[in-house]
Amino acid sequence: MTKQASLPPEGFVEDGIKYVPYRTLPAGDTLEPGEKLRGNCVYKPEASPLDPTSDRKTTKTPPLVMPIMKSLTQRREEIKSRPVGEDLINDWMPTSATLMLLAGRPGIGKTFVLLDLLCCLASGTPFLSHKCKPVKVGLLSLEGDEIKLLRRIDTLIAESYPKAEASFGWTHTIPIKLTTPKGRAWLCNQFEGKDIVGIDTLTKLCGGDINSPKDVAAFLSILKEVMTETGTSVIATHHCRKPDKRIKILPSDLIFEIRGAIDFVAEAQSVLLLEKAKQGRGELGKFENLEGKRILYTAKLKDSPTDEAGIELLFNDTKLRYLPVVEDYEKPFQEGVNGDG
Image 1 (cartoon, rainbow, N blue to C red):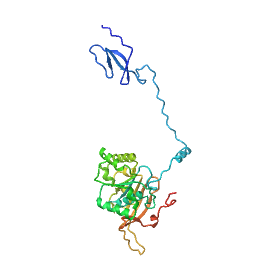
Image 2: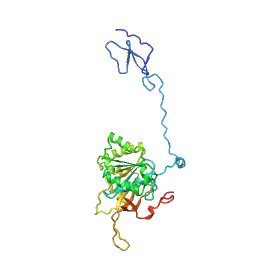
Image 3: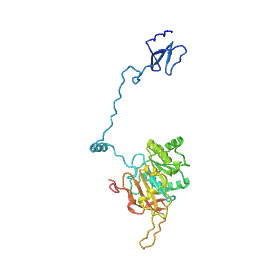
Image 4: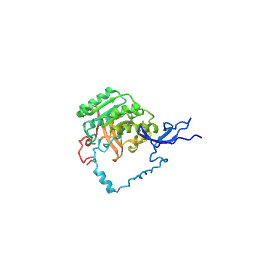
């Protein structure tokens, strides 16, 4: 038997890794992964402290300390010490990136209400007595005629919101599938620099089956990621089912008439629902002409009570917007009114 040569005690460093002598390489033998050959001596990386073959003492990882539940007094002090941000829309939309749905039957006037609300935000004008913070807004329209949309926007700015022009952006395009890398990057560019973006309509952006919880969850996950990255809130129009005249729907049940998977409603911070006014009688007992008359319900509010009575609106052909029938809603916002202050 041939006597193996003794291993040299010194090692060497290569690419920041220290190698130490391990064994000699017999004739015809091959190296194992990670080994280095110097002469007939095989070197391996020096054992780390966590390597079970190492003679060094291993270092123990300190136990993870989990926080305990704090007292109500401690939590109150922590919360009070934080700066209080101003709501984008008082009671309806907080400062963080959130989703609001504006739902209604097809052709009921959701786009008119969306444009009105965006102009209020761009100009800092109260919307139906709800204080709006002046912010940069954008409109992402995925359906309709852009010439008619431009006429509506120009009329709103000229007749009611002259200050909205400088803070209003607009993109009109065919539907783009958001659940692709290209679609996600495109949406990030659209949201960049905008505090709130109105989407008309949300289902056009979804791309998949709006009745499939899987497709809707994937779409909303990407939408929420983009909103969080850009800090942008979204107000999106959404459709309701066609009414069944055989069934009486109460205002409190309108939220269940929204089309698609329930994930749309579950993800939204608030849901506004535009509905036709019911037939009624005037002062002389005759049936009223309800053409152009709508009721705006707050079907869902996470941090405030809903309004089952709703707000009666009447369309103004000159201003191209719905105006409140009750005069109190047309008055300028005042602190201490409508649940604020």
